[in-house]
Length: 332
Image (tube, rainbow, N blue to C red; front, side, top):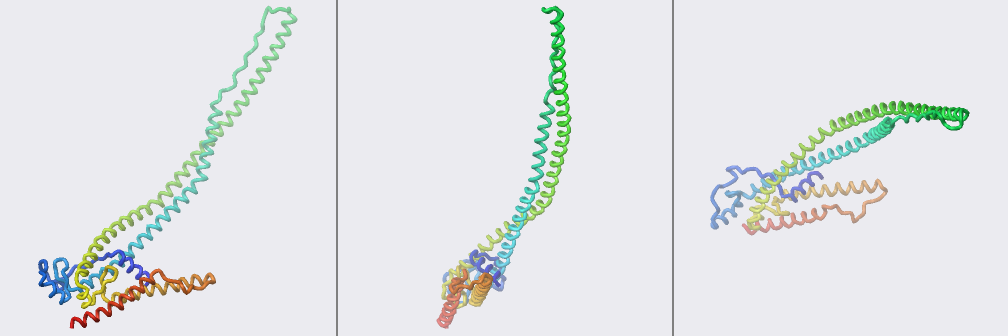
């Protein structure tokens, strides 16, 4: 009942309806009415609508059916919005999970690329330069004794340089061997991380695609509904304008009552009022239940958002019933 009342309220605000076509029995065809004809047709409860004299009770029925149809449209629109919201929320959750799943993999990939660059930098380093050998000098001063000392010293220096070179060369080869292994491992790790990212992305796209397709379909459906709503709004406003053009005394004589730019029978207004009252009572119970769960009681000043509307509608019904009675007495 609450959902029905909400739909009725939205329909009343939107002034939208799908008015069925009139049958031959419901309308009297003719050209633009002559002033002398108008009062006669008013006396029969007819108004000029789309080139025809139509009984106001028929237009009331059109409005009633239109509002009923629009309840379904409003409900469908609400369902569509809920579905779009659900899909959008699911897509956001997928994005968040995908990003979270990718973080450790991207971290491993970045680390592997750093190790690969470091290994490549090590492999690019040149080997140590070969030592320069000190040549033995002949015919130097000091005689044979000095030559012998110089030769021994040079030999020791050459040996020391060679040993340093061999040690540096050994370290270079060890670093290079280690870097070669690190490069291979880094490349393997980088490729593995890249493949894992591709799998994660493929799985993400596989889950995302049907949701995007469904959201697009629903969005297109909503656009179509919006287009129909525009047509319905135009139709209902046209009916309302025709009924509004008739004198209120004539409308009241045939129990046609205006409420918020729409026209109803008293029975329809009473049904609408009852649905709003049911919504208010249900809202009061829900509010009281929620406060009781918190150990609180519902304040005496608690007011439902639609209470003012319900009061105004109740007053309108009472006033309309009195006006209708007066109009019928005046007509007799």
